[in-house]
View 1 (tube, helix red, strand yellow):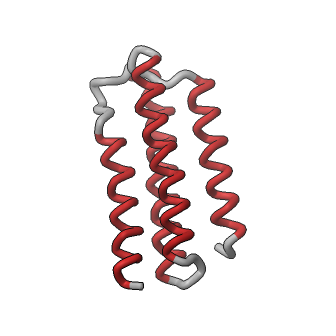
View 2 (view 1 turned 180 degrees about the vertical axis):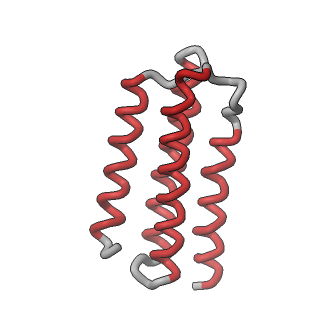
Length: 112
């Protein structure tokens, strides 16, 4: 159990390493808000997942699956930024928020 918990926490650290690839100089100032919004949601959601494991609401396997979904969203954010000249479009932010909403709904269905 302790090993799986460490693995789950390690996965959340990996998801934020993908966010670190996008520096503040990489994006235009007017489009940073979308990236910051998505990054903040990913961070909060990762904290909720970690807390759910500690509280016994989620198993470590469930937490790993949710964290992998968050990792995929973070990776997609980096890819979309690269595709659109270094910024996220309104549609990109809408799509990423939708994906985060789906993961949050799964987390909420777990009793959090």
